[in-house]
Length: 467
Image (cartoon, rainbow, N blue to C red):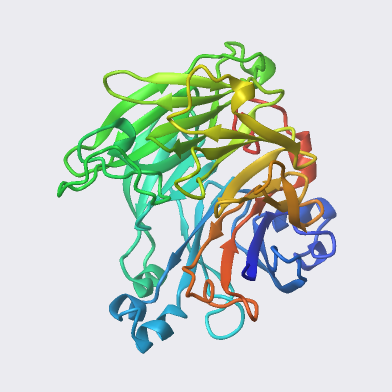
């Protein structure tokens, strides 16, 4: 019932109308130089209003594959009570930080200060170097102090940010850890030891803060975990001081008929494209064989359930939490490479005797091409982005999906996106559209459409460079 807005960040190739401003040379050179530009437009996505601002910012030299954001408050807000007048004014100075990962092997740290006024718009604060291949995913920790960047160089780097906004702007994040794997790392996320049923695990949920973990909540500090997916393995790493290292790994075998990579994958090895933490401390893994695995991981033994196989693999997952205690299950959205979205009931209490058809609620063709990223919006909406050049918002309150709005930019395949929420009393990420109750900052990454279509298929995450 509130006005809400969306900040779209389309990164990669600029349009033909913008290309001549890049510089001299032929169209091919112009297109190459234009890659890595960030196009930002504030749009009332919920109500389909017109764009209120638009700008283009240069940030990376090549295509951008991933984008994740978080809210940071000003130093005055950190020191003032939110109930005080000073705290209310300081809250207006909150900013959004975005991290982007690119084919140019770097991670960009951006700050967004709203629309209009001093410090508004997008600014590139830092460019983090260290990876030897393209960066495939970035992820903030629940506290926002750590950032994980996963790469095709078989590593995940852990970066630590300063604790104050003024220092974040002045000092680049420090590299505090590196986790090595045997193959590309497509995805990483932060959670707690509750995922593995470990003492001191706390209520881990990968950063969504619902606190429904089964670990004891005592005085012991929760164990911090990093979950990564590399090739056909899910790996859980401890980041807690004195307990660092690999705790558990799970290798998945092929269950479907779809062989990702064709001749480039002669062993028909399954690849894991995305992972998501589910209720009851379980993990969902989207696999290249056209299946989604529901995993319960324990050091004493694990269990696995299979959804699918589907006609095409799921490249990304989103968990929509139950609206209230009367609902018996969450909803798990599986977004596939053919543009189809499947919605399933999901709960640890669901009987193992229920098959795929009993758990599936509905499905629909959301896009005309590969869905690269998706995100749950509240308890009844889903945001999706695709290589067809659109970002779409869907209402899932009924037994079917209802299209709400579309943000479209022709010839701009969107590879990634992220919504950043303020609390209900805020006015948005540093400003926004007049009359907005809650403003949501969203980053979306795209690539050159012609280059994407010409790339050979291979055992790499959909949208990443085939190797």
